[in-house]
Amino acid sequence: MSTTPHRLSVIIPVYNERGTIEEIVRRVLAAPLDGVEKEVILVDDGSTDGTRDILRQMQAKQAAAMHIVFHEFNQGKGAAIRTGLHHISGDLVVIQDADLEYDPREYGVLIQPILEGKADVVYGSRFLGSHRVFNFLHMLGNKFLTLITNLLYNTILTDMETCYKVFRSAVFKDIKIRANRFDFEPEITAKILKRGYRVFEVPISYNGRDADEGKKISAWRDGLPALWALIKYRFIE
Image (tube, rainbow, N blue to C red; front, side, top):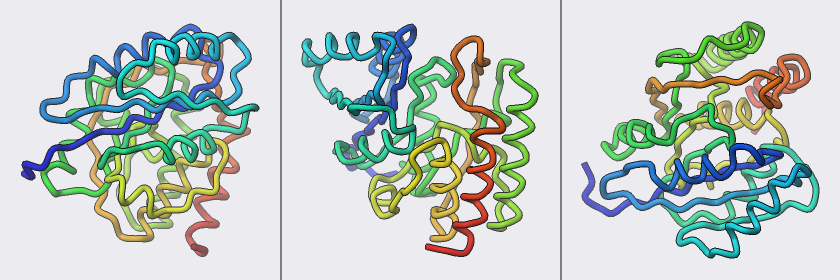
């Protein structure tokens, strides 16, 4: 294992998460990582529910290793991640949703294969770990898109749509992301697999929420663009 000091950049795209944003930031900052520094990049994607006011209060406190960026209007998760990528300084980067579905205490498990030199990218699989019993249609859509990914790219992923993706920063910066919305997930996966990067999966826990609790992704509205992205990037770029 490398003894070189590491820094983990945590990109958090945020849109209308007034009820969870303070808690998720607290959890990210408190996540234990031996010998690895953290920096947090929050990108507010045009929130209209008061989230921006909370973030401005955080910004005024000038917390160490925290950068907050504001989009003037809502552009989508992919666009927020692209913005966040311009602000990272770490040699590792992880995507963190602003709700409480994913547990930052699992960062150590996620980055371990990269620190050991086994992987360039690590996916946290919700289907390999413990999880709340969540929406059947979302599960079915995830399984279907993962199956299409495996067929098109000759791989054996179990959870292509997972938020928890960790990259060596050099890998992430090498890939041009065009997606603005949730089709970020299939696009980044397709381009990683086509380039032959070493991808590991590790089990993670998952506390899924439904639409009544604020979940924004739609199985139908976002599923078709995701399917098209998988097919399209199999043959271009």
